Length: 116
Image 1 (cartoon, helix red, strand yellow):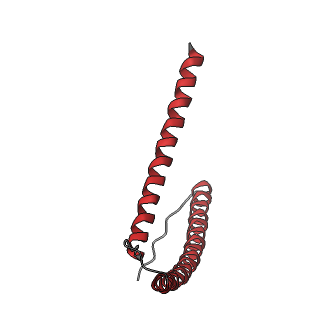
Image 2: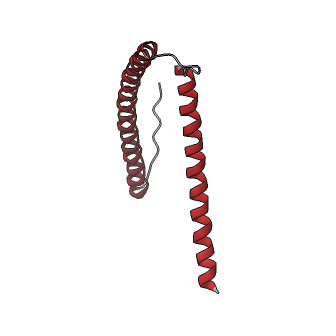
Image 3: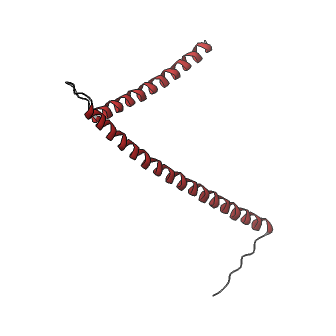
């Protein structure tokens, strides 16, 4: 095996070392971020699992309570409650979005009024 040597002046050598060290710093910061992400993701999955278990237990309790309550002509099921909750969430999101747009429009109108 034959060794090849390249002659670099001092400026090029220092610049190369700086670039190499900078790349090492970036790599270590990336590894630190990845480790942090993994920890957060693991915590998220644990919390999701706990939440799902509690939600299942909550649904079970609602069904039991619903079976103990007196019957009416219109019976509300858990599924209907979930659908109503979803619709409420959608309308909330829509209202929030609408209010945000209205606030932006009002701000622009005020700026126009100030300009004359």
